[in-house]
Length: 357
Image 1 (cartoon, rainbow, N blue to C red):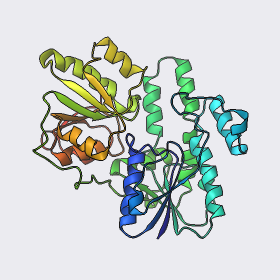
Image 2 (cartoon, one colour; image 1 turned 180 degrees about the vertical axis):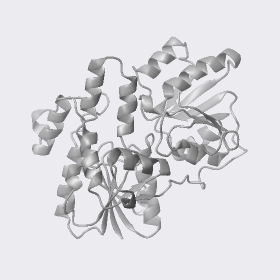
Image 3 (cartoon, one colour; image 1 turned 90 degrees about the horizontal axis):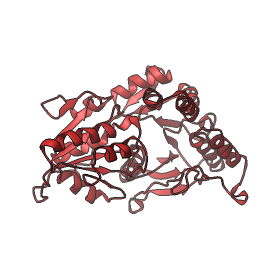
Image 4 (cartoon, rainbow, N blue to C red; image 1 turned 120 degrees about the vertical axis):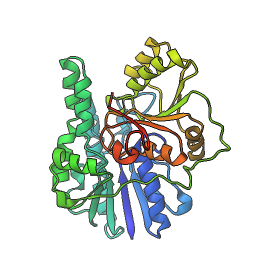
């Protein structure tokens, strides 16, 4: 088949959706399909040696580092979608799912007949409704309404809560779009139930396809030395959902009995926020290391060399890091948030399981 795989964000090193797009596109190509990934910034890193192609649909990249929430220069505006993107940002909203879907619809209609199927990776924007020139299937990893509620629960003050409600206003669009889709894929039974409850999608329209860890890559290797005291975790952002602040607090307690305990976080260090403040408060500057942009073999060796892998998330729709840690034989401590028990198994048998937080 000729497959168009849509992704409005494609960070391949940290963040489950970018990892999903990279590996799914590669394996579909290996099965003999023709795969074209259509994406926006940050563009996904793919495997062109397997025949996977990338078509760039550039946004204005308003959240790029080092100048997030930037105002574009006048000559950067190309059309009304760009104006909509900036206007939504100026009013405190998150425009990318909507604006990417509008650009994707325009691209797909201009290339009618080129694809046999369009596979959307959780954009769920209005632009995907109607005739795209090919049947549409969407993967929903978990409803973003879960993230919204966890952030609102953690918010201090009415102004912060009002700001979050505006930022997450796009979830209303995603609910409306999801209900009208003929076919939704998701990655766990937990996510299936959440999609039914939060998005109102009919059960007969949802199919569960669990994600797999690449055991050709993630496997035990006794030649890799275990580093005493190393705990490893993955965190794509400093948000309540990921629970990283709880792991930092736990590390401070552990170090009173095990001074050599230290944490490696696969992800970007936030210069401000709950995690940064907790690291400073507990004097853990030398005990927490952030690494980003590591290759697959480097990541595998980081996990293999750790004494403990930890998944501290308050909720996950799946948790690929849990599966990957278990595939290397690294002992796993994980919460029971969301679908993590589906992946990690029973407490005391395949992992140590703790309540979220």
